[in-house]
Image (cartoon, rainbow, N blue to C red; front, side, top):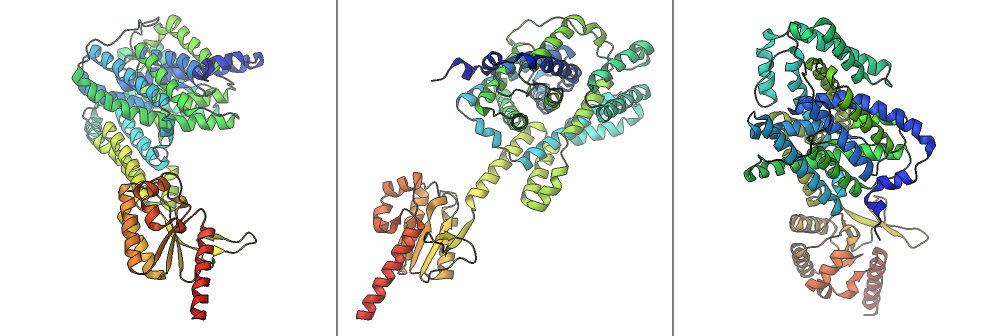
Length: 566
């Protein structure tokens, strides 16, 4: 029976909490907040929102995931990839209207939240394994390139226009003469400071230090009067939850499509992080419950006037490195961000936008994952090409089409693997138990008996391939018996059954008996329902390959004895 703790794992964590963990969790929570505040503001700018929206999006999901999530370390916060998708989705629909932009953002976050919750309830946590690592790597590299180009304008002090990666690059190059030197110098200096701190003192919250330095410099040097753009006034306090009022029904279609892409990419990129830190700290997570937790976190973000959120690798790593033991880390971080909203928003008005660009660029560098590409190239040229195509899809067609390309590539890969599975002609390895079938070249072949294994389903899209392979094997081995090892063939559909019947008839015409070993599951059920088991004959259906082999050898002995007696 499902208990409340199964639905709300945070309650169990609090009941089982040890007081000696509190010090570590408090330090970790403050460390997470120190990084989450500047990154939240930076990602709000990236997604086209006001700075306070980034703080709301950093605050409320922390509370939601701490209650509903199963990872003790994972931090749910604004994510660069999700922000890029949000900006690409909302900008054309809002047409420059900030109120419409906010309403569309709330709607998108709610749609993402609902889809995640439904996915968790339907036990679709297996989607975490849907996008292969090479495809996900290629997609994230494309996102990183797109974000990087989008930050060049704020970093150099001018506006970069145009849609798409290459148009933005062209616009950037054409406007280089408009570079605002003080803005660029400020941004580059802060970027160097940020990277230096991260490399020399990784335990120090570098983004917070950079923000403090940038605010102090802007105030002391009056950078705004020298043409350096700043964030401006940031409202203090908490937002009033509200539902969107200006979203038309016709806009729900494109929003829902984007929501599906965000769900897939966010969940697939979040779960490796959650599983990795769970393995490091010696516990397991529930993918389906975390799917629900991600949904609740997005509902909290949307209703709190924020935007879509996901698993945040950098903030999760900060919390773990600071010694965070449980979800209390997220609660402490949320309290610290709330304190910033209440007491510390006035100084944020002086924060230069070029500082935010420096923070985003630094974070995006961490998104690039070029090292595995060499491994993909050496191990599988096909997977390497899929990774490159995913990257090119994002930077040439855009973020949203890039999602569809990534999903399409994943589906094509699955279909290709299922349509052309590995197969083998088996022999017998002799051992004290009586021997077993193997595709080892040293395995003993039995004259007149071909043992064939097809490592995949036999269904509509590969039935012809299966028939062609069987014909080729029969032509090479010229058996009197074809024994199919069906242990790896889990599924047989109507088309596959018809293909098997056609082969049985064809082989019978050549004087070759068809036998099947280890039929089970859906394959056995389809054999019985289609009548194939009767036409093949129950005496040619065997529980193991060894049984089929021994039956063949007995029949051959009888034939030889009969021939000798004759």
